[in-house]
Length: 392
Ligand code: TGC
Ligand code: FAD
Image (cartoon, rainbow, N blue to C red; front, side, top):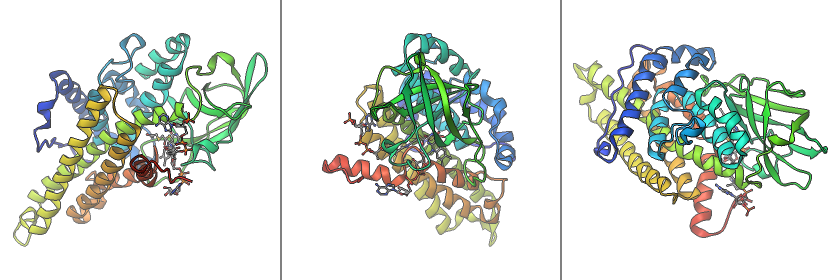
């Protein structure tokens, strides 16, 4: 990829809703990404590796635990700042945003919300700085959309628990120092356990062959009679609602992140349409190209409005799971469509690593599936408006 020429687009002057602090946080993240991540992201995407060297920088811009209180090393920011950070990260690459989402909402959040004070003190500062990376194990080979069916289980052995089972499709599993794992007790109730790398019987093989989210590492978590100290259970909440509340926070971040990917695709297409000459004029002068661009910025603007309002509701503690599902579903589909249109505007160049659209397009195929598939989110909205769940 050449120099990162990204310029933000704010068609409805949404920045007027933002505080100076929020704009500053976003600018700092944007500049750091342009300098440190954009120049290397295509190379790592092609290699199929996460660029581990960016982890301290992610910690420094506040991407790990943006809304976790400062006393635990977090940035103590509001939900809109958190969203803006996710937007900037995904503007660069969904895999980079994924790492921050998992760390913040799926690892730090449950430890902060449901952990003991000792657990908070032990893990949160190291996770906030990036000294440690974490992962979140909910999905299993036979239980994806239906996590309540999970098989992974633990039994009480008096002075410790014994954990058995396997998780699959786990972001950052191959190198995470710590995993928040959801497993059933002997009565079938779901609990969160903190599992650390190095515990006997715990392995994390990497999964290969992804055509999407290639700059993020994905793996399995395998538990073969792993002894878990009793103090590693998250005592604050049990049942499926515990992991689901973490997903609310991560899905909210994805709603913002998808706008970032869409903005990058739009920005690149707009610039290309003014520079590329065919039939003696810039292709941006043809009505069919203008239709694509006009529809892109319209959809981005609608998503920005939806998501900003959701952020206000999150700040007030009023956003519902179903509202979050609506935004995740709408924005990811919007971004997928824009990535595809952007790729077409770039013609053959659109399939190369000179431009970001094909990488975003492929990444978004993961984003539309993880954290609840597109159709599961539709069913969440359906259940909310009718009062009749149609999952089973
Ligand atoms: P259901 O009967 O609806 O609910 C069971 C219990 O859970 C409670 N609950 C929630 N509580 C808090 N917040 C939420 N968002 C909640 N959603 C549900 C619910 O109240 C109930 O509690 P109780 O006390 O009455 O028992 O559950 P169900 O089994 O019918 O499933 C519903 C369904 C399908 C909507 C849900 O399970 C679902 O969303 N499935 C999708 C699974 C998913 O999103 N997995 C994501 C894995 S993590 C991931 O993908 C990370 S990607 C990382 C990256 O960014 O790289
Ligand atoms: P399935 O549940 O098997 O679904 C297959 C199809 O059936 C989908 O189209 C789905 O919409 C449809 N379907 C399922 N149930 C219904 C229904 N009731 N009604 C109608 N249609 C239905 N998980 C983690 O726990 N931690 C992670 O860090 C993590 N990272 C991931 C990273 C990547 C790159 C990917 C791709 C996935 C990751 N996941 C992670 C897993 C992800 O959450 C699951 O893939 C997702 O929840 C869907 O589960 P599944 O793939 O088993 O699909």
